[in-house]
Amino acid sequence: MRRQTFVGLVLLAAAGGCRPAGDAAARPAAAGPVKVEADGLPNLVRLTDGLYSGGLPDGDRGFASLEKLGVRTVISVDGARPDVATAHKYGLRYVHIPFGYDGVPDALALRLARAVRDLPGPVYIHCHHGKHRAPTAAAVARLCTDARCDVADALAGMQLAGTDPHYAGLFASVTNLRRPTAADLDRLPADFPEIAPIAALAELMVGVDDRWESLKKARAAGWKAPPPGSADPDLDPSHEALLLKEQFREAARLPEAKERPEDFRALLADAEGKAAALEDALRNQGDAEAAFHAAEKTCAACHSKYRDVLQRP
Image (cartoon, rainbow, N blue to C red):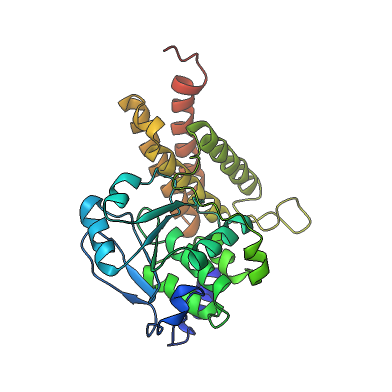
């Protein structure tokens, strides 16, 4: 039902686009979100004449394409460390505002909006693949900075980029957004770091534990949302499995994880695969119990070797 609702909203999107406030507002608006082909820029979408979303620029090829497009500011919402040095080679400014797949926190939504409003444009917002977090961030920024952009317009850009409606938190960040006033944005600090503190492996594993606790509650309820009146009546088992999968994926991309032994990285990859299998079982009436036990077994194997014993240098 959630997927049908979001897709329905997207299909109602108006044909006309909207443009961010600030310098870009003086330029004529693009006809609407459109896919654009550019070397080294995966899943590139032009949302307005002053705002693009897409994936991680592929080295010199990607940043050279951004320069050709006239982009002046690059905003990464991905957890990985931005390639600031290469961006500077092409005269581009970087801003790092990372967030997860569970949604855009209110404070970060305002920071995104102020960056898009005040920094030189056009602006390119990217995550790793350009399908989920970057289109969401762009949608939030548009809603915060242009009163002519409505929810349907914002969702249309996400739909074109291929954002999966199963990421309920990302869509809720758009559909439940409270639009700030210009004064709200003006009150924010105007500092935009090029490299923000990145979550350590241990912090991501805390998130993994949180997802497991939610899945255990869902399992106790027969793999259904807990009943009304319980502590977590809105818990969605398949969504928790999806977030678990993304936690493992993000953990594997951390520099700290890449420095660990090959066996550790293999266990992370296996855990991601098992979480994906659990999500699939929950969405498609598969054997959720078997998938849960398989995922649990992989976690136990990793814990016994890397968490529950003293790690000597």
